[in-house]
Image (cartoon, rainbow, N blue to C red; front, side):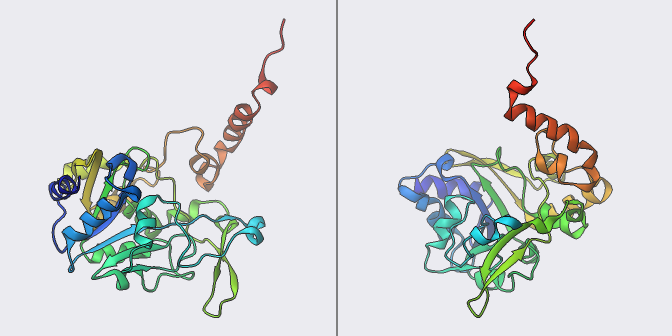
Length: 286
């Protein structure tokens, strides 16, 4: 499996010295050992000492009325984003940013610089700006269908002010420990838009000739350069700010949590009520 993974990563365009933002579903990729260490080990070995591997290590928050029940974020808090970020957190050379909800982890030459200066007072997706400056590549393996697209789209949305269309973002909170060890409440200011429709950008990537597709292990994978993806995404969203909306009538974010979609709230609420209590909407016999 290890030899195959290295070959597959090379075929995806990953090379020694690269900076790579990776997202992967270990179960889909397949691995020889528990925890999926082969994928991370092969990726780190391939980029080498001059390269860097980064990953999203996002953690769950809650609503403001739940704040007192939320455990404070610490550098050891597990990520909900899968086995890869948690495997990286167990690596002796890992660096992690201190953003209470959207921390990044990184290993390698640029790891410290990538994660520094990303705390409670900073934008959620700011490390993406550093990855763009480092000419990073973005690799998604095994989770393309369930988590389409690339994280650069979130940065483009923020830079265009599209996050301001989210209704009452401060309702989303976390807790964290400040430099004095005191527990503080964090209010999210720049929530991400729904990413379910990020596949809509794929055609533009293909037309620009920047999207590589293939297999990593047993999993379908895509890879593209961060800088070019960001430029394409920002250009498209600047011309059509609703391009990133998903088509699901059940999506909370796209149908009920945006000011420009507020008119869809009654229908979304009716559908949710009908789904949760179908007997209320059943026609009486006769």
